[in-house]
Image (cartoon, rainbow over all chains, first blue to last red):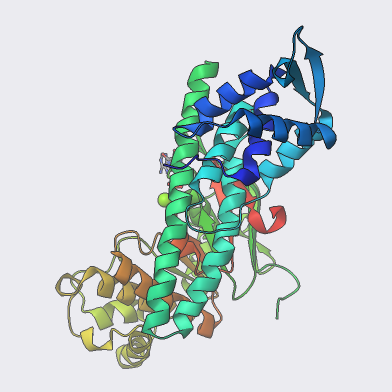
Length: 181
Length: 228
Ligand SMILES: Nc1ncnc2c1ncn2[C@@H]1O[C@H](COP(=O)(O)OP(=O)(O)O)[C@@H](O)[C@H]1O
Ligand SMILES: [Mg+2]
């Protein structure tokens, strides 16, 4: 199984992890691997290149440096601009396409970890999916049998995305409530 | 195309059954001829919202305006007259009268409005043709399939040329193929008749037949058009 967070969203995932408090690079990597990496952990190189990009863009700042050598010693904190960036990422629906679950999963988990409402994310993503599903439904109704079969396949996959996201959000919402007690 | 104001609108509806709030400040609006999906998890208040909009259930507070008239300002007789003349209904289980034939079921709303048998059944058959169930006229509901029964129910809901069709999970009891067929014929028929459709469903594939969707959660509604 591939790493469930794609290259595009590693930066956002790391930023999101920083929202609950400053962390060292190694700590970030560990948290990422545990939550999103599954059997494909991040390379240290990926963490540091991502963090230096975030640093350059003003989304994180160095909060402290431990005695010793190497980039490993830096402690990063998210900036206001970084928080805004995470919020924008979570609020922006993904372009509907098959096998989105990795990014959607990361978004749901991070939304709940940072005290945001997973249903907002779900509603926004559903709206985006429905926009495409309406187009496919319309194409199906005008098309021949071949069009119908192709559109049905896409429609079932998009629906599966939403059902899975809905179930995940419901499960995690319940879990969050339990954890927060 | 879009008229100035909505045909049917609800503002800040509250409705509780005992201590349970079913609606907790729900808004809604639909224009003439529009198909609006009402989505949301089970128990979120979708059916309660539909029943309030249709004047079947009276909300504890909030206003519902249909064609410029406030539903709460009408008495029961006026409201049921409005339901018979302007609204049509389809539910998850067809709710056809088992003792009547299919054509008699479809003709029933016209008969209740005072039409003669022959005229009513002629109009009924024309609608059954549009829903592709005209060959079932002489059968009783118990003798037709679930999908056919739902299409008969759709024909019955449109036979009076309603301005608004209320459909609560109309495909909920059907398999995918029959569900698709019902949705296609229902929306085609409603659009060509110019009827607005309030379509309650939790299925995205069914909602994809709508023009836009609102989401109900914990008795509150969210108009996705205004959000996205
Ligand atoms: N007639 C009723 N009596 C008591 N409680 C009801 C009644 N109708 C609905 N409810 C309650 O109101 C809430 C919303 O129900 P409903 O509108 O049927 O939701 P949905 O259609 O979205 O599944 C639920 O908690 C349900 O149990
Ligand atoms: Mg219901």
